[in-house]
Image 1 (cartoon, one colour):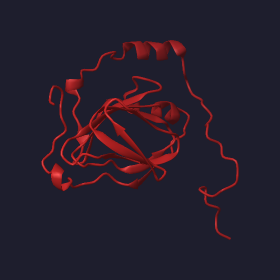
Image 2 (cartoon, one colour):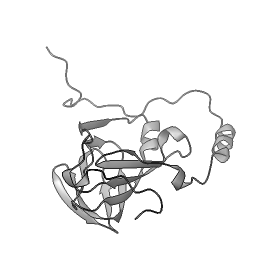
Image 3 (cartoon, helix red, strand yellow):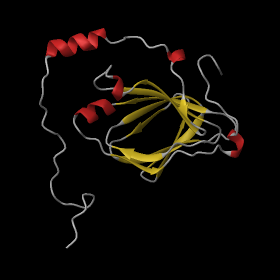
Image 4 (cartoon, one colour):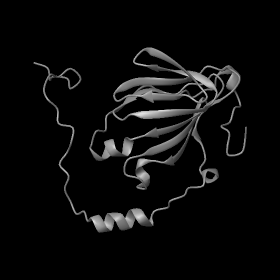
Amino acid sequence: MALESHYHSKKDRIFVRGIQGSYGLKQELDRLRSAPRVFRGDEIKFSDGPQAFSKHYVEPEDGVTQTLHIHLEEYGPGGKSQKHGHVNEAAFYILDGKGYEIHDEIKYDWEAGDVAIVHNNCVHQHFNADKYKPARALVIKTKPMYMFLNMLFQHQVEPRATEATPEGVGFKAREEGEK
């Protein structure tokens, strides 16, 4: 008999691991208090592309926050993100542009000033609906907290595009001060 797939299992699953090891509140507070409190956005550069670019201000491996992951996403003209899913929630504050999300095969339109919420365990993808102008979103996630709880499931369904859209050829993410 084949092994039961964890995707289709009816068995209860344990999501929180035992936490053990040396931990002193004073040492942790000292570490957190010595960490930077201000990050200069112009010193942090975009990565990825050519359709979806990311600028990570605070992320889990930094050890600066215990519950937040904050990054800026820029979608080039007609660009899209990878299609993926993860355990943690995310809030996308749309800074400029217009586009849409597809969450579990349901389309949600957005434009500058909107907030798009990605719920836990949702397979989703982000799209810039404008073929000629970029779109930008500030993203706030609770990913570090989920990682601490060992709730690490994240799955990529479709990777980020490696080629620009026809209209986005040569597009570079806008750095600080650029419009």
